[in-house]
Image 1 (tube, helix red, strand yellow):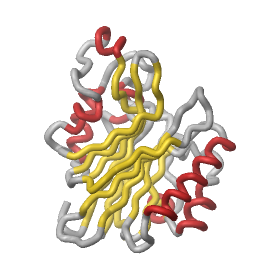
Image 2 (cartoon, rainbow, N blue to C red):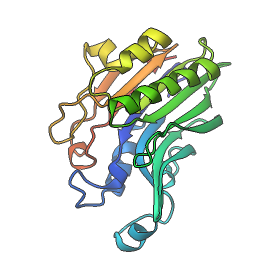
Image 3 (cartoon, rainbow, N blue to C red):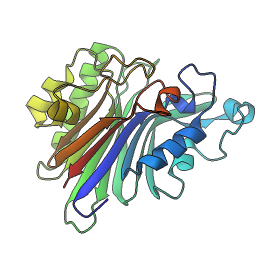
Length: 250
């Protein structure tokens, strides 16, 4: 990142398994992410711990998946559990080349069978007096569930993020009917980067034939100048989602 630009990627990594769940591909995901060289990476469905898989899956890392992916490229990271079960847990993570001033995981679960959370971090930008707020999301599959989660997200932004501070919200919204526009654009003055630059949301799911606009990148207080779906090799054979990349001028 130069002093006045920032590159981000958002990616649902499917807990490190291929689209069919037959192959453990976390090592390939790590290599592909490093090639993109993003400044900040928003990750969903990242395995924090799984006692059974750690002993049965070949090449399962000894550390949590977010630490394994971060390695020496992203020295700063935050992880928030949003699903806890007997053998372990998974959730959202943010990897950053720049330090966090603070971060917090906000529980937005309203169904015991599908725990969800918002991971909110504050990153100090180099050579700037302003902080960049970043929120990694993975919202519910049901419209009523998502509506409540959007309300919580809006309340969080209203109460914790000054309108003058730059903000990026990225992740898996599962927003099949595009209801997020009313919540995020009309109420909070947020813009979705793909819709702004290309005219429509990115098709990112399923990876082998993406037709659904489940993954999004919203922003405020910064200027986008590029966005891409990372749909070339090797991405289609990794997760069941296609990662999205965006670049901004600060």
